[in-house]
Amino acid sequence: MTRWFSALLVCVAMVASASAAEVRGTGAIGVVIERASGSVLLVDTVARASIGRVEQLGDLSHASVVFSPDQRHAFVFGRDGGLSKIDLLAGALVQRIVQGGNAIGGAISDDGALIAVSNYEPGGVRVFDARTLSQVADIPALGPDGRASKTVGLVDLPGRRFMYALYDAGEIWMADFSGKGAPRVEKLPGIGKLPYDGNVTPDGRHYLAGLFGEDGVVHVDLWQEPLRARRILDNYGRGEERLPVYKMPHLEGWGSAGDVMLLPAIGRHELIAVDKQDFREVARIPTYGQPVFAVVRPGGRHVWINFAHPLNDTVDVIDTMTMKVVHRFKPGPAVLHMEFTARGHEVWVSVRDANRVQIYDAATFAKKAEIEAKAPSGIFFTARATRIGQ
Amino acid sequence: MRANSSIWRWWPSAILTFGLAVAPAAASERPLDPEKLGHLVRQDCGGCHGLTLKGGLGKPLTAEHLEQWSRDQLAFIILNGVPGTPMPGWRALMSEDEARWIADVLKRGTLR
Image (tube, rainbow over all chains, first blue to last red; front, side, top):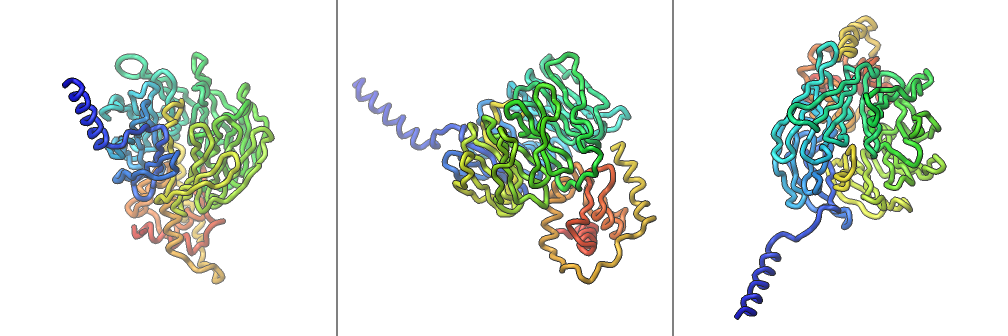
């Protein structure tokens, strides 16, 4: 009797699991922004296939994504101030709020509890509970003249902290949520004119903000107390007139490769290699156009670069040992973003005007597959959940 | 917008003063392709001004916001950029006719 009962239980369990959705993990899932249609494509990076689409996410021009620590949920930051929480397993929108009028990306705290959003309108940073999307803090970015500034370059730092730059006011702020109650905000004033983006090194130690209003980059060593903003690469343009900049470079993904970091030179067809110890320039690498993203292959062997309009049909691959372009190819019209798989064996490239995402072998540069997508821009894989400053 | 607002105060008058360097287009210019231009505005201008043109790092390009400038002033800004801001001059990439076409559809709010 007992044996029959156990057999019956097993049968019931089997039926139940078969009827439930297929059991799977999220480690191979990615999100591709379809900027013009307000939707995101969910993709499987192992199968190299799309597995779903989530729609009605608002204006996704310049959208970006962060992931919960368990890689179950994606948080999508839209241009229209929308903050959308997506369940990657259900392939569905869980919750969506419009937290501001005009936003430019966000970050998730290292404990996964807080979502911070950077706003142009009203200028400042708002912070939300990752579970409920209820507001935890509102930090208007008021400059010395009392006027609200657009905020850019928002990243997470270890210890429930966030750092960002004030575009109009020319300051860098750190918001520290490690204590109870209201965040402690530390301000670094007078860093330079028009910081356009910022990022932190993968070890969480160095925050770098690029300046648009002058030739230079601002460096903050987060391991030093008190925090101090220091200018590096001063006058890298050597007084030469810069080319018109038809698309702002992004510092996301600019990376560390061995002993150097590669940074964009505004209005120039080149990258600047900076020594990671003393932050001095060690080399210039001529490139096809003005770099927008320079993404390091995990492991640091190569750096893949795309370019500003109108040279945005081309990708350069730089060998980080020789600091030379070793491969140049044309994926198609309007290459907007590149994302490596977690250990860097493949790279996904969004080609907006071809309505395609192309997948390349990172070692041989051979194209392995392509996926249809509507005007794809940013590509984000769940492995980002494990990285600082993503 | 401390730095920028001062520029925006003088820039339109500069345009009036230098008046209008947006002269009638040369006859040799290539024919205008509305579809291509519309795509450029939506997608590439949209990088800074937003896909819906409601603004971003750059100003809104809605008809309402652009009311204060004439078509030729806007064409001048498109071709020459706004000094001290990230707005580049697009002269190397488009003709004066094309800039005027863009100014027109933006002012009328008829960009598809």
